[in-house]
Image (cartoon, rainbow over all chains, first blue to last red; front, side, top):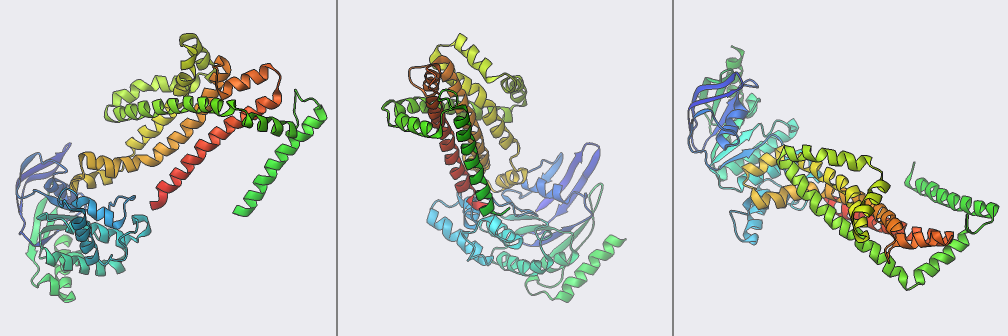
Length: 231
Length: 248
C-alpha cells in the first residue's frame, strides 16, 4: 500500500504535511507514536471515514476496521453480529451462517453463538469483533489498539488466536498500538512516528517469523522501540 | 425493602383507601354524595352487563386508537425531519411549549368552538400526546451511538439495512415508552372531551349523563372503566418493553 504526499490539517494544526509511507502487502505493520501524532486520523483516511486535504492513498478499497471497542450491535447475538456483515456478500442464508460460525469457532466462541454481547466478557466481545472482521475478504485490515482495553491476562490468548486466524487469510494489516511488546509479538515491520507534523522516525523489520517468534525476539523489538522514543 | 414486603405494604394501602371510602360513606350517609362500596360494585356490575357497555367502551377505544395512530405517524415524521434539518426542531419549539402550558380544558373548549364535535376528542388528544411522542423519538434519534454508526459505515451496513439493524432497534425502547406515556394522556383527553361534547356513545358521555342525573355510583362505575383502559394499554406496553429488552 502506498501513501504519497498526504496533507491534513485540523484548523491551524497541521497533522500531516507531505507525508509518505509505503506499507508491505500481506504483512502486519505496527504503527506507533505519541498520542495526537495522527495514527487514528491516518487509519480513518485509509478507510475513507475521513478525507485527506491532499495526497493519494493507493489500494484502500474495502478496508476493514477493528476498533478499540468491540462495537457490536447489542440487540444481536454473537452469531447475528457476524452474519450481518456477510449479508450483501453471501446470498444464501445457510452459507452465511456456516461462514459466521466457522469464523466464531476460530475465535473459540463456538459455545457462545447465541449469547448477546451484554452476556459476554470484554475479551469475548472483542473476539466476536475479530471474527466479524476476518469473515470478510477485504484486502486491508486496520486495527486501532484492538487489544488495549483488555485485561492483560487475556491479551496473550487473544493475540495467539488472532495470529492463527490471520495466517489462514493474510492481508495488509496496519496495527496501531501503544504497547511495544504487542508490536514486537505481532508485527512483521514496525514504523515509529513523531508528531506535528507526522513524520517517520524509524522503521525496522522484526527478524523472525511472527507465528513462531520467541519472546526474546519480541523483547528485542520492544527495546528498540523504547530507545527510539526516548531520544 | 424486599419485594414481598413491598407487596404487603402496597396491598394494605389499597385496603386502607377502600376502608377510608367506606367509613366516609357511612359517616355522610348519602348515596348521592359518597355511595357505599357495595352500591358501587352493584352499579359497576349492572353497567358491565348492559348491552351498551361494550359499545360505549369501544367508541372511546376507537377514538383513542385513532388519536394514537395520528400521533405516532406525525411524531415520527416530524422527529425524523427535525433530526435531519435543525430548523424543523426549532420551528416546532413554540408549538411544544404551548401544548405543555395550555390547560387541557382550554384546548378542548377551543376545539369545540372550531370543529364538529366528532373531531374534538381526537384533536385534543393529539395536541396533548404529540409533544410526548415527538420528544421521545427525537431524543432517540439524536442519541444514536456514533461509534456504532461508524461501525455500520465501515462494515457496509448502509441504507435499508442500516435502518433495519441499527436505527429501528435503537429507537424501539423510546417508541415503547413514548407510546405508553402518550396513551395515558390520550385516554384522559378523549374522555374529558367526551364529557364536554357528549357524543352518542363514549365513556365520557356516560359519566356526564350519570352526573347530571346525580347517579354518583354510576359516575364511579364508568370511571373504573376508564381506569381499566389505561391499565390495559399500560400493561401491553410493559410486556412489550420486557420482551424487547431480553438482550440487556
